[in-house]
Image 1 (cartoon, rainbow, N blue to C red):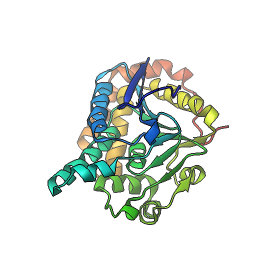
Image 2 (image 1 turned 30 degrees about the horizontal axis):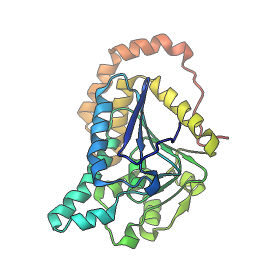
Image 3 (image 1 turned 90 degrees about the vertical axis):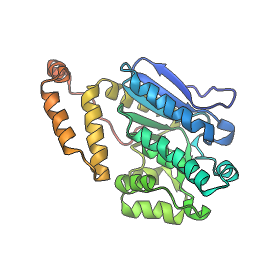
Image 4 (image 1 turned 180 degrees about the vertical axis):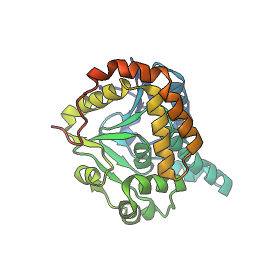
Amino acid sequence: MADAADTASGPVLEIAGARATVRLNRPKHLNRLQAEDLGELVRLFDRIEADPAIRVLVLTGTGRAFSAGYDLNSVAERAVSASEQQSAGSAFEVVVNRLEDLSVPTICRLNGGVYGGSTDLALACDFRIGVDTAEMFMPAARLGLHYYKSGIQRYVTRLGVDNAKMLFLTAQKISAPEMLRIGYLTAMVPPEILDEEVDRLATILAGNAPKAMAGMKRAINEFARGELDEAAADQRHRDSMRGDEIKEGIKRSPRSGRQGFSRTAG
């Protein structure tokens, strides 16, 4: 994937076949998200979900970093009242939650460092494939910021209580091998094969049954949040047993032995 944008802009959407790519595009500022980017991201997510031809989303950044997070300085300057501060903070949370609940499977292509709120943006993706030179840190404790509830919940449910405490309370930077060890990264690869590994996983996901994946993704996320809609999950299971996807899947079953996906490559 080329990171060839010459000028900074809001998020860029690229569609190629069954894959959509959303690229954060402010490389001179390490793809720091501005307030105007938030609504655009939600619009892009809505557009992707509304297109039945799109089977997988890849989220990435232009240049040497994935993202430096949300521009808290501009928020602080604009948000002079308590209500404005709440609105500014919740706008980012809405974007991350929308990404987490997207029906299509999502891959974060971590082309470099990930910092602040963008660590949660990446964590909201189903998979995170990162270069072995990546790093991350969550500076909330240094900044005096109590992070929003759903972000803390994502850290706890995906990384565990001890790792969530280590990242939030110490505000220490960690390297890619440590990101892999604690489960933040799905896979860690050398930069030269990042695209190959993302392509491999995206191809697997795009080839699976979209309704079944969407339903199981929803159930897994609900389980993690402790709010499973049992009746809806049961109904999706029953519907799948007599749906078109299972009929097609049975026809393809002799060829179902695809190569597995590894946590490390290279």
